[in-house]
Structures are given as C-alpha cells and as structure tokens.
Image (cartoon, rainbow, N blue to C red; front, side, top):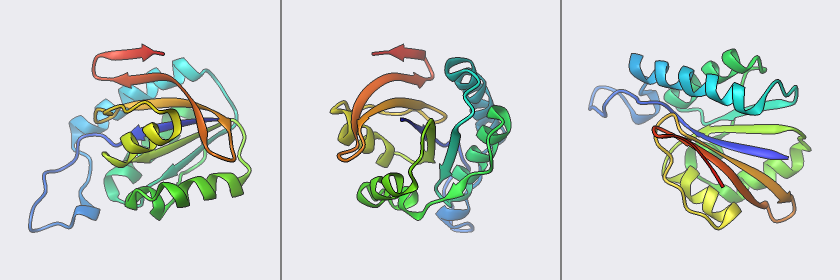
Length: 158
C-alpha cells in the first residue's frame, strides 16, 4: 500500500470573522492544488484503487475535492483524526479499512510532516499543495519508505 500525505493549498488569512475550520482556499491555492494534482496523476499513473481521506476543515475538503476531480477518484471520506493530527487513530483507521492501492490523506502542517517522520524516519516540511509518497512496508507498525516529495521546487525522489 502507498500513502500520499497531501498538504492543503494556500488558504484565506486567519481572522476574527471566520473560524479556522471555515477558512477556504484562495483562488491561487485552488490553482496550485490543481497543478499539483496534475503532476500527481502523471506520477502515479492511472491507478484504479485511489482512496482519498480528508480533514473536515474547509481548506482540506476543497483540496480533496480538486484531487478527486483531477484523479478521477471517488469523493473524499472526512476524518477528524487528520484535522487533529492524531496519528494513532489515523493508523488504526487505515489498518481497519483494509485498503489496497493508494490512500491520499489531505490535511495540515505540521501534522503531516510529523506523520511522515513517524512512518519513514525522515522529517519533511511539506509546502502548501505539497505531497509525500510513502510505500508502507509493514501495516502493523505503519512503517515504510519515503519514495518522493512534491514541493514548490518540483519532485524530489529518494
């Protein structure tokens, strides 16, 4: 199984008028997510088993919607553990879901950065609209190998 940790695109600035949960992607954020999703599609090919999970925060949901559209995947399933950064619950849900293929988790920094380190031993700092692909080698421990990172400077393979 492969897991792609995908950080949401650029969002509206924090303000007193809108809760953090309701902050939406900016137009530029939407465009960057779409661009990253196109690169992702080229990189992963036309895999049929693509599952998308998303934080329920608005900017992550919008990111997941764009990913679903570009990749031709089903709509995202919302997971509170992605919003809260609860890796233990995330890993338990992954194990119980019995997924195969690719799972894309649309979420937030610094949680996704920390999850990458937990799974691979490598700390990455995902850019907005950035992604990291992890090939999970042991489902029991959720340990794997960092294969590549997609950021504002392109794709870096490991």
